[in-house]
Image 1 (cartoon, rainbow, N blue to C red):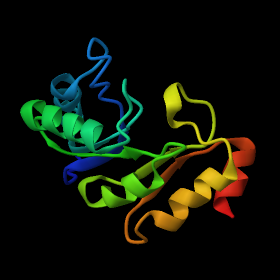
Image 2 (image 1 turned 120 degrees about the vertical axis):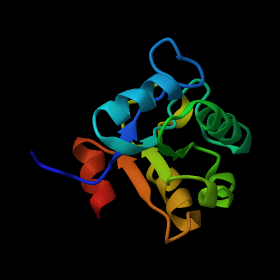
Image 3 (image 1 turned 45 degrees about the horizontal axis):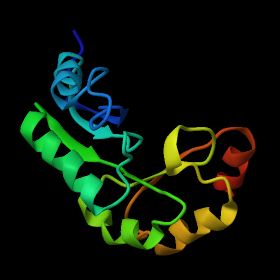
Image 4 (image 1 turned 180 degrees about the vertical axis):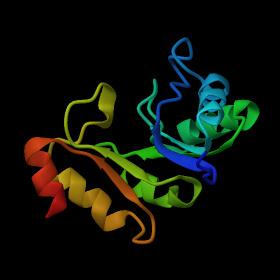
Length: 141
């Protein structure tokens, strides 16, 4: 038998709010614990997306009521929320940037939008990028 400390899953979709029939903080964190994960970091592409103070509070309140393990919530980088997202950085797991196809309003398909977030986001906080093909090369540079 291999013994490990509790694991951290940095990419989960709790789907709350908006699609709780798929997953919520209760079912998702129960599954995480069953698999040996003691902390989860939730993606912001919910309905509505977690991208401002109100939706972050809604997500954290739901997690506080239902989560069965440790958790954190990413903020979604949108086309016009760079300043507000940066102000909320301390309450989040990091900034999630969708640079390729995703549903909803979180896709950043213009490098000037990326730069707004890069310039404002606190340097000590993580930025997590969903990047594929050409956007992968661009974000690595």
